[in-house]
Image (cartoon, rainbow, N blue to C red; front, side, top):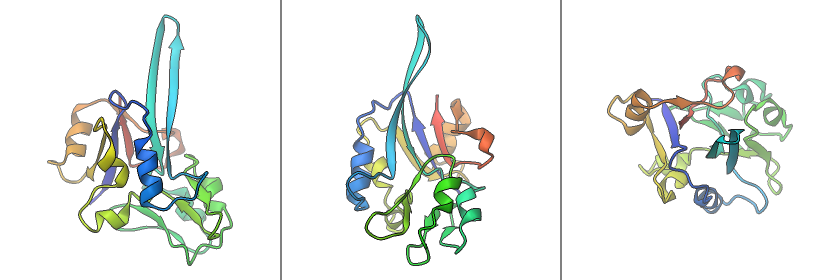
Length: 178
């Protein structure tokens, strides 16, 4: 099983419902976030393109955060989800510095590093990540890439897509349809 997230940038309207759902679901402290929306404008007039993109931890197969963690607090579980065990994290920030996606932050009250978990606690109950479940445009998809019949497999097989920072060699598991 390989969990992945696929986001259709042609359908995203930048509403940030995904960000709010994540903050509420995961009790994220005010002023911090596990996911965020980026707006990009490419090209020059009159050939300009605009994109909204929901970003987060990319749950990489080759995760530098896991390699640089001195305690093993950052680790990969079944399905390829990258997690942080708060009790093992010493808050040194090595994982924060090594992440090419700026997807981690030091939890201001608890002293450990925090990040997107693909809402693993919801997956264990058969539910989708909070961000996916609330998206009003249904631009976010989540599933098992190893299942040829899953929506994510079908979308990636039939649509052009990209990942962020491919040159980092992290093999991210968040894909953007273009």
